[in-house]
Image 1 (cartoon, rainbow, N blue to C red):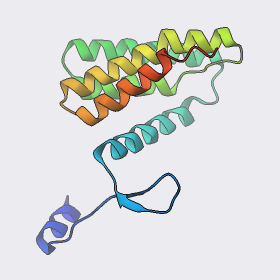
Image 2 (image 1 turned 180 degrees about the horizontal axis):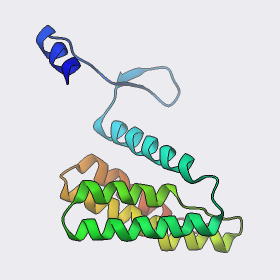
Image 3 (image 1 turned 90 degrees about the vertical axis):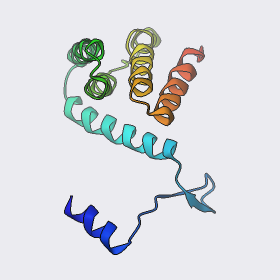
Length: 145
């Protein structure tokens, strides 16, 4: 865009910074930090869109977005697939019972996170791939329910 060209022409640079967990040190943000922030922002956007829907409709929305994502993935349209998978995750409703939470995690959350990691891998976005695979692994090994 115009702003980017102006910044390049002027020699200006942008540096993303992050705080250490205790807030004491500011350091340069790593690619993985930026990927996590982008992912969380997209999730929050879709979650706001579907928050008023009843649980069954949210699950139907999640299922439909996942199926559409799978179709795009099969056509090697990895960015489009990833956006649909993010919508699928954001539409999830974990319900109130342990059984409902387990079902949503096992049938939607883990498979969709794995699909997102595969999209990132095919798109050569390795930091995002690792982040998503880590999310899926953490859920898969979480047997606290």
